[in-house]
Image 1 (cartoon, rainbow, N blue to C red):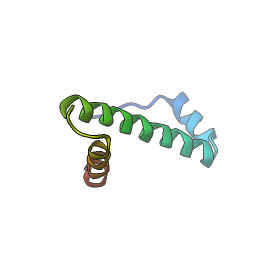
Image 2: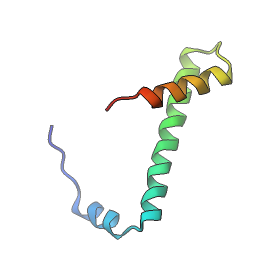
Image 3: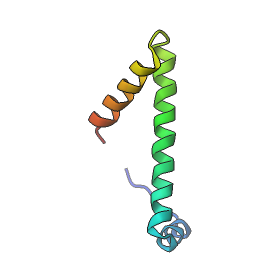
Image 4: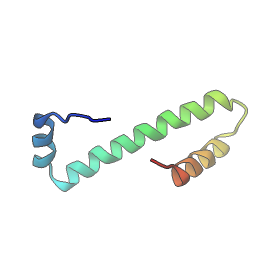
Length: 65
């Protein structure tokens, strides 16, 4: 599968400072965690918050790309 990257987007990323790139990355990670939390909550409605947090930790620790 081939994807095309917008040259304008590449310019934006190249112009970012390392701190800005880190903040974008952290925002993406936070969004992924929030979505996965909502998913676990929807299928395991009887779990406590601690159980969901543990499942999140496990999922991110053992996730594969």
